[in-house]
Image (cartoon, rainbow, N blue to C red):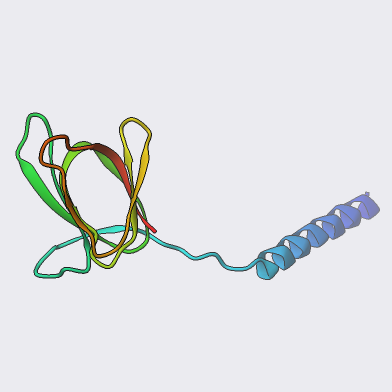
Amino acid sequence: MIAKTKRITRSLAVTIAATAAVTIAMPAGNAYAINEVPCGNRTDFLKVWSHHAWGPTSVDCYANRGKISFGNWWVDRISTGNNDIIYHDANGSKVRINRWTDISFPNRPPQVSHFEII
């Protein structure tokens, strides 16, 4: 019985050591999280003017690389600031817009499900 316990303990120790070695050897990935930020007077943020069918317009600003759900709001205007972005519309299309672009959608605003700062 003691030999079986030693073998299980040794096997567990080898497993833990192998897991630790793989964890240490793996390169650390970049952690990004898009954040909603106060717009203020800054022009380098992603700035989005939008509205819901039943509500007032909204102006929101975002910073940092990442992806954020936008809840299928209608987008009236996008100012990308110092960000290359992709927006995902409700139809499944992905539209890339380069940094320092200011675009308006006066007649047919897209309904956006996600924004992604790349």
